[in-house]
Length: 81
Image 1 (cartoon, one colour):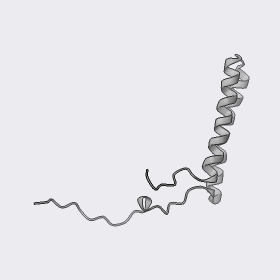
Image 2 (cartoon, one colour; image 1 turned 90 degrees about the horizontal axis):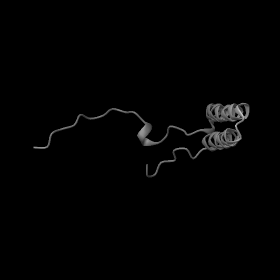
Image 3 (cartoon, rainbow, N blue to C red; image 1 turned 90 degrees about the vertical axis):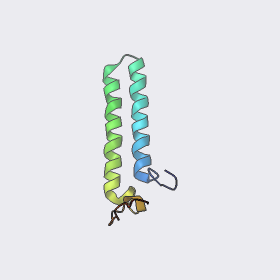
């Protein structure tokens, strides 16, 4: 998407960084054969999604001001002839 700012917000960055840390924790504990640590890492991944959603609700997410997101009247397609 050229010219789009998709995902370049504090909410997106924070959520993704927390989820990435959770995946790293889960991966490390999976290699060490520690199921409790693995599930704790997966909990961190879910927490990243929750934090990102909360930050978006607080207004730190992407605003729908991009022309692609605006719905308006459309003209019907006409055949060239």
